[in-house]
Image (cartoon, rainbow over all chains, first blue to last red):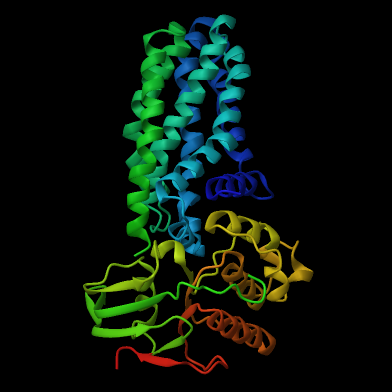
Length: 217
Length: 203
């Protein structure tokens, strides 16, 4: 098994294993999305207007909740030292951990976006665009999240600090993602969102690896 | 590795005039020594004298304030060394055999007998959570065997090990040295292997 395959397999297994907590963000996302119509009432026009932005906020917060322990656990138990001794570059190991996180929580949340969108009265023809945009948005959130998690790995209760670091970067995907879900579909907003998601997930691991190298000192 | 695959290229490591500071305080300065292939070197020193920092600097994790560490006949140092620190690098939910498989992939290698050699065959399927301190340490020792690498940097390797565990460790070290590897270990108590040289830090 290659270093990256081993990393992916381990991270994915740990997240979906007993006590791994992969279900929690999905549950949070579904729970928050369910509360939206309860809080706003059943009025169709209101739900159609306010539903998509709230779904995107729920998705962003669901990711945020998983970030605190992402590298902190590896720093505390000594696993981080071993990453540095692998033939694979640290950047690629970080990217692989991000990919495992996307598969474990990003993809389920994107797929859960379909029933949620329907429940919030989104037109059926928009549902594929919403699911794909959530998938890309989750990749972007995770890409930025890797950096926040790496920078705060040595900070006890760094959750709030992570939020302060990453939330400004969450703005572009949220803006364009909400536009996609609000009716723009596969238009320019979708393309900009795709650009954000892919750029974040390509650049995030490089910055995160640099931060982690400082953490092991 | 089995009975000891020889490291024929005879690796060596040399520390030149190393100075390390932690938290603004100088731990030691002008530390120089060399360890040859096939030898076991002990680092000794009081608590806080910088044994761990020295090992981490040799591993390349920590940037020294001055001086350098050079390796002879080693292509990429980070791929030629094992670092066994105070922390065992275990995940509570993963089983002993899952750890061995993972390390095999991450570090490059796969040694089926690793768990047997450190005496953990019977608990291979238990999660690390259920292992005692000593068993966890033995599992970390198995990492040294999973991927054959010539240079071993060990920080208090005998911590939490029972008498049998110490014997296993001593046997691993002597086998490794006799097959041409080198071992640099920070210790307080003798490990039961006669060191070829002793490095004292923070005298």
